Amino acid sequence: MDDEDYLGPPYEFTASVKKYTQLPRFGHGSDFTDLFSPNHDDQVDYAAGLVALFVCPIIFFVFWTIMIITFKVMGPANAGFLSGHHFVLPNPEDDEKNIRKRPFRVRVVFLIATGFLMLFLFLLVGKGLTNVNNATDTMSKSLTKIEGMLREADLIKRNLEVVGDESISIRDKAMDALENICPANPNIEQTSGLDIIGIAEQAQTDLTMLADFIEDSLVTLDESLVLISSSAESATSFLESIDFWGWQTKLVVSGLFILPTFFAVGVGLVMMGFDVKPYQKSLSYFFMPLFMMTIIACCIVCCLILPLSAASADACSGGGDVRGGPDDTVLTIYRNLRGDDTGIVFQFVGYYTQQCNPEYNPFGFLDEYLNDLDNAIDSTSTAVSAVEGNQAFLEEQCGSDLPFDDVLTIVKDMNNNLKLLRQQVVRSLDLVKCENINGLYVAAFHDAGCTYSVDGMAWIFASSLVISVCGLIMIMLRSAYYPSEEYPSEEYPSEKDPSENLGMPSGNRQVLQVVEQCLDHTCVAAYGCSSFYGELPDAGHNVK
Picture 1 (cartoon, rainbow, N blue to C red):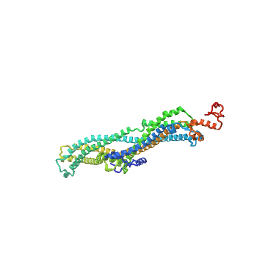
Picture 2: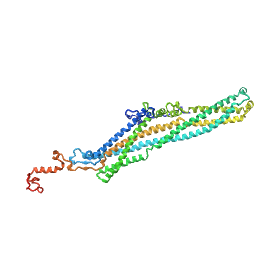
Picture 3: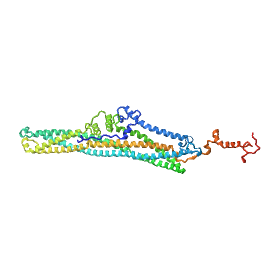
């Protein structure tokens, strides 16, 4: 094979893979191959690190959700607008802390959160889902090429079976014909100078090797085809089971785009002075519950995608202290699963994943058998030439029971079959060239699995995190789409009001004002003052 000069490209670590490998694992390991380790403790340790990555954002989102529920239960009297109630404003002359500006600030924050939510929604689709889609497309193209190669390999195998069976049958006849080619004159070489017996013996030796070649090559090729076919079927099933752009994703994305638009319109109407009660009720009792469910779904996606993307990055980095990329990961996993097996499957995996290292070449026997075929073709061709050029002399000297015309026919048929076999071997070698298979491996693992998919999941995680935070902010500040209300004057006392200093209830303030006025006049009755003309009781009532 012409693979000795070919060196497979190494994996180039992306920024996403590097960042994920730096995530804290809270004392647990980050070697992906530990999942397939024969040591159960190593498996548990790595899995615990992934669980910790899942639990951290869950705690954050659950705590925020509990806080929102707590504010709702506390009600407007204790939590104010954070309970979802409308803003209540004091009189302007009593507003020393600029409370009347709070609704405007809250609505601005609400609109900013809405803007960031929609911006990162576009990034989630444009950067996250697009990269994941590129990964699946690249993987699908590689699998399509592999399927084509499998069909060609199966055709080669069937041709080898047919030509091989014919060749073995002809070989047996040719060996019988060559075994006793000149019984009448065993020393014909000394008589004529033509070593016809030596030529025949060499052809016999080469044809004997042919039988081993046909049998061994078919077995090895069949094992390789089974391995590749099963791997391709598993990868195809995996791709078919994953649909990042299914109806669930479309529903969530549509909800995250449409629902915030309605809320932004509601806030805009309030800021322009429009109080549309039916629209506000629809926001509170229809759109807001839908938005809450959408944000919950987004939070779940965020929590799930973090450990998943971290595990993918670990697999792409190689794990452990030595970061050898996905190539080392694949070979280490195989060794963990199969032990010290160094058979054809191990050589196959090692050869195509380790940049075509000739140390693992599983098809070296094809090169050897190709040389054997060339030798057999040369020796049978030499035998044909020797017999054809000296046929009359040989018939006179050898006295063979088998006519030399029949010998020539058998050896020529054998020579033609050897050439057909050689063509099939060359096709096999071209098919399994490391440059071809390694190119598919690089496209599937380096590009699709460790570039597009990891980058895509990184964008999905970052975008879903920002969307979830902005969504929770919008839920907490949902009072922004309600108009503000004024406090009644008796409920917002002035600092100059004596009742505030006296600690009197606000309902008795008017009585206090009447008493103050009475103190400035001469009391003529128990319930009034002389200056209150129509309101005084009869003067006959004496003070007791």
